[in-house]
Structure formats: structure tokens, C-alpha cells
Image (cartoon, rainbow, N blue to C red):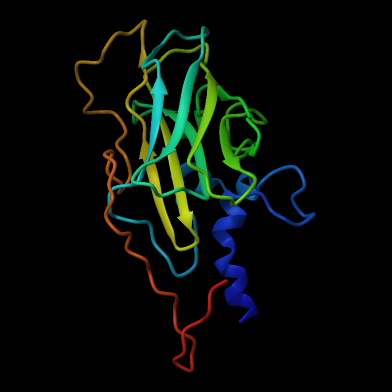
Length: 221
């Protein structure tokens, strides 16, 4: 039972700040680069939702100039479903680019914190952010500072609705590098994970917790 409970906490340890003194200044996402690269939690007994995500990433404006200005990035609920947790980062849209570059930097508004900094190039920068509280959230707004190097960019996020229910690798619309212009061919660009780009309101498919050896279902909580 103790082992099961520890495994059930894995997603919160990966995408949320730890509530113990073991991680006083950062989530252990810094020590699990698989989570940071794929945005997929190792949450015991569950799997990512395949229904359209009831959350979205809104960016404004939709173009940027390398090394200049800033972009407003908003995580928002849709269909009246708040989210408890998230992991937000960036990558170049060109699928051949190193996903660990995580271009640009985020500010850290109240209730958020830096994560995945060790896997970023360079490290110890605000290139990915997560929450530091499991409280329900309707919307969160960030300021993102563009990199000096150019390239089209997408914002990526995983949203946690509750412990067994999450959507992985939700994408924003393309952030276009104004010095390159609107791309005419996006066949080599990254694509979202199993989650649709469009908001959806269907009920999530919740994976039942595994049964113990005696045939009873392990309690959650």
C-alpha cells in the first residue's frame, strides 16, 4: 500500500513543487528530463486523455522579432473545467531542432515556478514553468521574452485537471518569426501530442486505479 501511494504521487512530484523540504527551491522536473522533453508524466495507473483538451494556450501577438519585444502567453480553461496543474515550455517548430533548446524565457507570476532548468540550453533559466499549488485555476498569464536567435516557435503545455485526468503536449498556434515570414510549408514542423488543438467538452476517459492482489481496488487520495 505504501509503495502504491508513493507511485500515485509521481505526477505531482514531477509537475508540481514538492511539499517537503527535499525540494525547497524547485520541482524535481529538473531531475527527470524525460518529463521535460515529452511533457508526459509517469502517473501510476493512468494514461493521457485522448479527447480534445478543455484547455488552450493563447498567444499575442502571433509574430515576434528575435531579441526584441515580448509575447503574452495565456493558459486558459475551456468548457468551464479548471485545471490544477500544468507544465509550460517552448520549442522551435522545426522538428529537426533540439527540443531541449526551449527558446526564450518566461516571467514567473505569483503561484508559478521555474522547472526543467538543468535540461535547458543554457541551464538555470526560466525556460519552462509549472505551478506551486494544486488549487484550481481558470487562467494564467505569462510574459515571454524572445530569444536573440530566430526561428518559428510553438508553446507546449500539459494540463492536469485532477490526479488521474491530464492532457499532454497541447500546442499553441505557431509563433511566426517576422524576419522569416509566414511559412509556406509546415510539413517538417512538430505536431501536437495525442491531444487535439481544438477545445473540447467531452467527458474525459478516466483510467480506473489498478486492483490489488486480493482483487480489491486501491483507494485514491
